[in-house]
Image 1 (cartoon, rainbow, N blue to C red):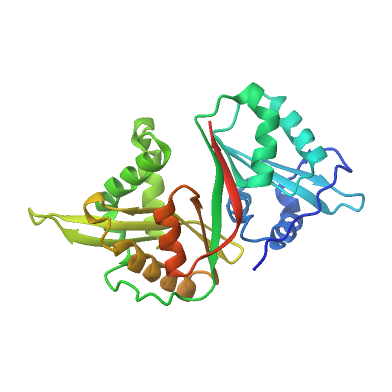
Image 2: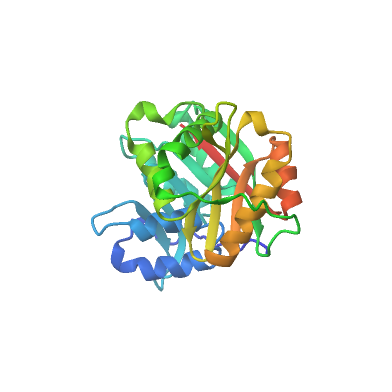
Length: 287
């Protein structure tokens, strides 16, 4: 499955789209559901008062490029001129985003225009492999991996916090209970997968965790993959991910995707062993 490039052109000025125009936006997203999955999740949740969706439209009203402008900014389909206009719009306000994420050409192009005013970034991840699977893995799935139960939220939360802290660089719990609430929502929706074991004291703990962090347009994007440090290097991640993919393809979505930092060679090899193929490159700017 090769990525579809949106033919962005700077014909019209950037404008806000409202909920009544969602169908047009979904048609745009359908051209490339893998790249647009996170943006589509946000649009599906968008309220009638939201001004978080920006678009460039052609003469006949067709959408040429879209940017989600919420806590994170997700640019899709912009030309070089379009990125100029998007950057000018973002710089015209007082607040900045928490991150930029999406296709690397879009994110890095936009960041070059924003860095002088919004920088320095906390972290720039210039090359993240966007990977996909549409068939179950040839790797034997771990039968101990299963959807987490709602009552297991207190058991899962420490693993989620550990994953976030390793990946992003700070403990999300310092900002209150919003992260714990998010973890609980994913569990309640059946989108968190775990393997648990008992430690030396007989206490049950999570040793593997993965979430379907974004689900829209027939694409389930896996996020938050984590293996307990004491269990790493034993092959648990490979078979556990095969189990997650098998479940997701059977019950949740026909396409499974994820993105991984290019320098995380171990994770890249793990996903390739499971059966993921590299589709293109993403990038993330953490602010």
